[in-house]
Image (tube, rainbow, N blue to C red; front, side, top):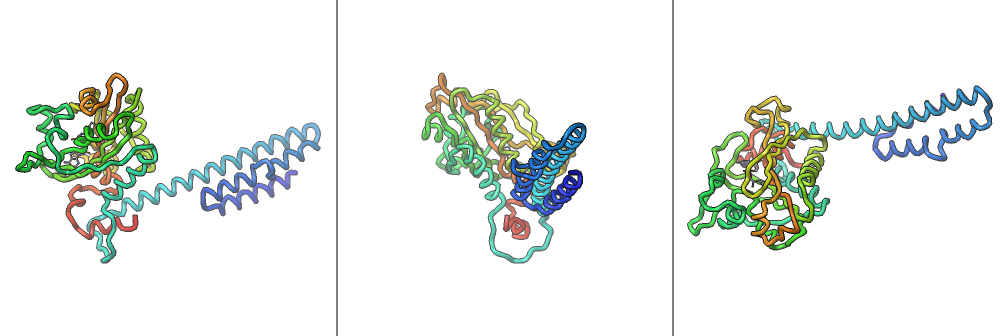
Length: 342
Ligand code: FA5
């Protein structure tokens, strides 16, 4: 039986080394460790062996079984890591100074990241809504518990039209409309372009994208909020991302938080993209203020909810390793062409 075990080990190693996909690795596991496989056959054969030899061989077969199982797990893990590394390598290819060949058009990186985030939330039952870029004061501010002359308006100066309408400063401007459209319970995301009178630098633009999300139901709590945020980030980056929650003030949530992620441009060491802090403010969020729910026609005795305002442009910077936000709006074909085929 010793020879048989040795031959089995060699056969197993050869088959596992040849497996190139998760399916093939699983096939090796089932072939060798399944109920009708050679390891199970050895166990059956063991019944005919007596005494001390039986104990020794039994132990040996168990060791082989553990070895095979560990090797299969390690091979599957190595494959998973290789896929992630390949994805990171592809993302790191971004370099606006590289020469590129003229080629067919491709999706803008913001469109790519928007679709990716949409598909993560759609798979969790969120509807995807659209909302205009030109809005009125009520939806952008008043319905969000930001009355006229509230200091929070100073943070969101924007461009006003002669008729009193304005270019929306945040996707939160759609919250009231969506609550009234669907009522509770409700799960929705709504991406959109936002505009602010902003001092432009490597991480601030006057035109940028956000993706808002709200979930309203009975017994919704901060745990639900944290779960959905982490799930989205791990799906988008296909790796664990370091995040931190800080208290944050927004009149339309209580309590409110700032969710930051460790800067992936500098690995958390500090660079212009993260204002040398090592952290990038990505997604403010919180529990929706009862005044906002009431303005949206939601029964606050029955329902609670969370809201978040993901910085989609900043997410694209992190995902694709783009160090300067201005590259997205610069219209440089050389930079944008590097996203074709993704
Ligand atoms: C807001 O806009 C809130 N409406 C977010 C919110 C929604 C809070 C729901 C609570 C509940 P803030 O101004 O911090 O918050 O912007 C949200 C995100 O948009 C920022 O974290 C950042 O990622 C992005 N962002 C904001 N300003 C800019 C800018 N000028 N350029 C690029 N991204 C920006």
